[in-house]
Image (tube, rainbow, N blue to C red; front, side, top):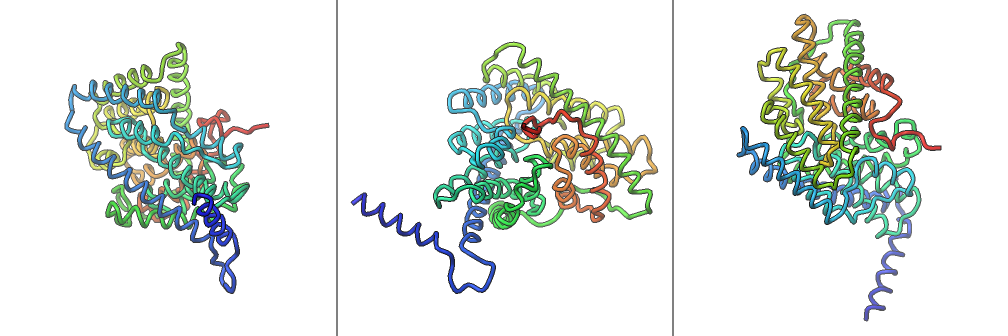
Length: 422
């Protein structure tokens, strides 16, 4: 009986392997595969986001001094999950697997990735949910590709499309999410994966549609920036100037992360001890500067609408950079895209307070673009993402800032697996 079922399955797969006949369009069966992956990615992202919001609101009742033990306990719990269930795939591992493991992302540690990142993000760690989702949806693409017996470039393309579907669901920018999934592999290598761009676009569109249905997400910017009016050619010069300043901050962030990494690696500590220490330190920072808690999705609007003194803004900037560095190096799980946008927004507010005559929106968007491009080396996708998330209608100044940040990035990459391999 089992043998008969297996023969039927093989027969069905052989039928799927046949090209669609009498089809005068570019449309083919592979489109359905990309669409299916996007739907799965949207369901995964939507379910993850609902669980994340529930857990976040549950833990948000603890404030004041209570955040210290809460974040310590969540850090310890996340460390125990990683220790006993398995080590989640970090962005370095994802990049290496795509580039050097024939595009395969292993789904075996997805349970650890989801559970540990939910605790880390919901309790107030300075990392967002995008990296865990990219790992889970990317490995779903690998699983789906193996199910349909894809190999080589087709399997790699489906893994990348899966990554794009998870990234896009959160950010609501199919084009930006698709380009990010290529650029994060290393800007110089993006052309190698160009064949994955159409699968990524298709999966991203379907993923965002499903995600929007699940969480009732509307189209439009999520951060309330004031309107911007182009005032002349000097605006491009200002964008580059702000980007140069932000790139310096990007260098500072990378060096800060290297410093904390050296501290945590001085002694061989088990992962749950590291995450416990990280939780205590993050709780202390959150106690004194509550706006630095969480990854910044809602806090950026709070920052923009608040009336913070320049001294407080400097303190928020410094301790947010420290908080992100501790979160990254102590074993807490998550992504750093939105936290970096928060840092850029804070720097833009500081520049505006020092020089009130400059346009606030231009300063904020330029700083956000440059610091993210400097650290992640993704100038194209950063430009598109920010244009979508902020509603900044003038595309070119953001591009100038992103490219400046990219070309002023240090040779020592923050994501070590982006570096050239011999």
